[in-house]
Amino acid sequence: MNEKIDLGQDLTVEELRSLYFDEDALRLPPIRLFRINSKDMRIYYTFEKKSHQFFPGVTGFLKKVLPTSPALINWQIEMGDRAEDFVAERAAYGSLMHTLFAVLLIERQFDLETIHGIVSDYCEKKEMNVDEIQWSRELKKDIVAFAQWMIDFQVKPLAIEVPLCTWRYGIATLVDLVCKMMIPTKGFWGEVYKSGAKAGQPKETTKDCEAHAIVDFKSRKKYYVTETDELQLAYCEAMVKENYPEFEEKDFRLFSWHPKDWVTAPGSYFTEHTNKHTKHEMELLSELYHLKNDVTKYTRISFKGVVELSKKDLAENFSRLTLMEIVSIEETKLSENEPKK
Image (cartoon, rainbow, N blue to C red; front, side):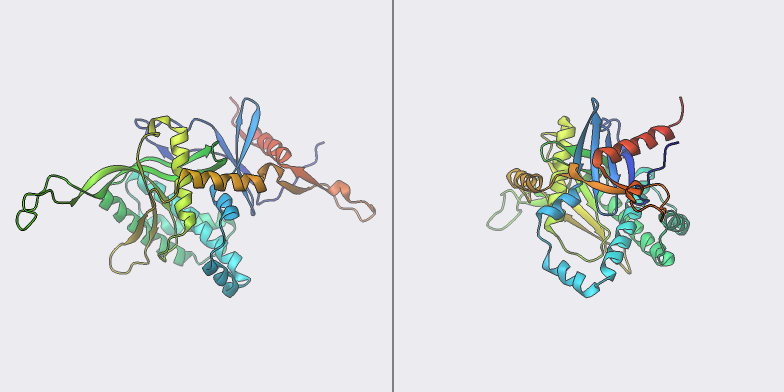
């Protein structure tokens, strides 16, 4: 009888699928992408022609190549032991917020009365103890703010939470939103000065123009921009263009969105990050990461069997598994759980 190998409850392997894509505008992602989730790392991988290719997630990648901001360091010192728990809770909140935004983007409506039940079920599944009433109120405010943004910019989703990787830079992620939207754009749209020294000359004005955009959602309420925000979107654009050649020559606008802690009227921060970083800079950061890091060397201790004090050597109760061994075990579980045809 095979002994069960315990990799830990915090480690899972899942095949990633787009929550939505516009069949008239996009193909399915060209390659199947899987993700290993653990407390300390996310590793993406493909499995094509009986070969695995592994990628770090873009967030983990950027943490390795960019310096930690002094403000974040000071905050971590002030928070002390509470910092890790706070970050974990806000990350969980952000994940749920992303999921609910996807529902609104796809269905074009959302019943706010269902929020508390959704929060309760989510926390039970995650085995989290949070202020569910506070979370529910915050999510309602954020959903209303997001809906107002969708209305103001006439957002038309093309793909939501689309899993993509890039061989050029060797990273992967879930791209929050690829869309078309109406964006106020400055230009010379036919108007002229009617009087004064410039009478009759073209006048620069603003009008709403449809544009392709990639938008990254954040759950933070304070307004600030980080280099990580900018680069994350730059790499997302690279992934979209690499995986969808039809967009290779398309000029994408890059934005981050996060809600305000609004009181009287729904509000949010919508910040543009287009063309903030060059391809050369992105290549150098990728080269630096892969020079010093290799996700394929990830290992994890597994536990099995019964611990017996009569044995002096407990080596049978644990072993260190390689990344390929972990993937093999988890892929076997996935195949066993697939419905029989």
